[in-house]
Image (cartoon, rainbow over all chains, first blue to last red):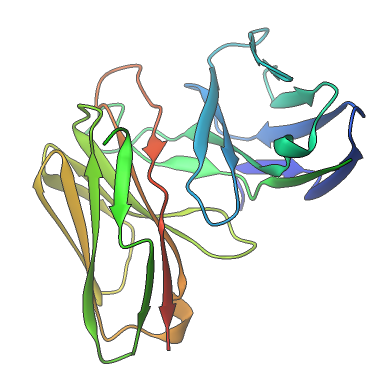
Length: 115
Length: 114
């Protein structure tokens, strides 16, 4: 059972066409939600951390928001260079009773922005 | 070098070969991870090390053998792999500290088992 669900699986946008990606989660006691960007054949690149409902973070054309059950990654006026797979992840407490543990990752949304 | 580096970036090996993947982090973190990423699947956590001690082995077959000689270096030793082990192997690091969960990833090693 997936703890993190991302939608849509794939999204094609024309340059300048704004949209949103969704990440819903089922873990209780959320201790943060992370957004990553991953280019083909490369490792995920950290974008944002959100900790509490109502929080927002922005970076260039991206804005991440968080509610009690989901997060949105809003992309405003995207450009072709924004094409990538966007992953979200939430931590699961584990390890030696510390904060160290696994991250539950979603399957990602593959975004393609065409000129 | 900055961030998390991995070598080699690409590896092709036969099922009878033995090879090793290397990861090095330059972030001053004290925890390191190995992940496997296959097409259309979420990232799969394989191993977690904190302060050079393995704290998690996520039911990974014994043909994968991790080694963490210090908090900056992590290895994944491979032997008698199967074709289904072909994937992108990612190393990540983080700080094992209350309230700090972000993991930073390396570029990955694309492994092909023939």
